[in-house]
Amino acid sequence: MVRANRLNDETPLAQNLAKILHQSCSEAVEEARHMSADDRAELAVFCYSRAHLRDKGLAMAALCAPEVLALKSSNEIAANILAQAAAFAQVTPNRVSLHYPRVSLAYGHHV
Image (cartoon, rainbow, N blue to C red; front, side, top):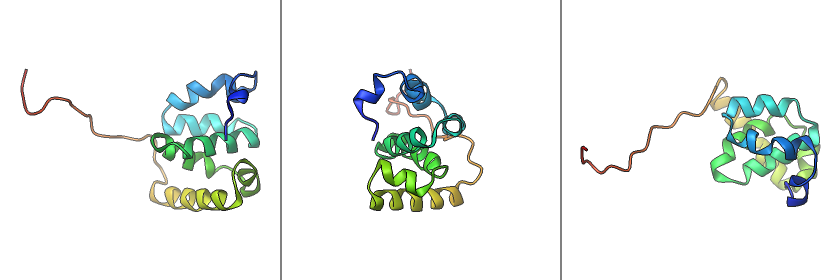
């Protein structure tokens, strides 16, 4: 997992973490392609472990070698992430970005 001490250092992962997390899924994956294999796997596990970033984590995990991903988590978790990443890629092969309906706090009242 991404550890707090790694977020405070001068690694590319630490320097770009906030930007990557706020990008669209496709932009984040493109950014991850240019990272080292270790950083990419660490970021994939980090995103996967958070529900609101799970799709990004799965998309990034699809770029990772199983043995590198296993170093950043347990073998069992890595296998689970990779299986889900493969299924995610089949369901959404050309997914450019995540589109969700807009949410309104209005409850049927027009202002």
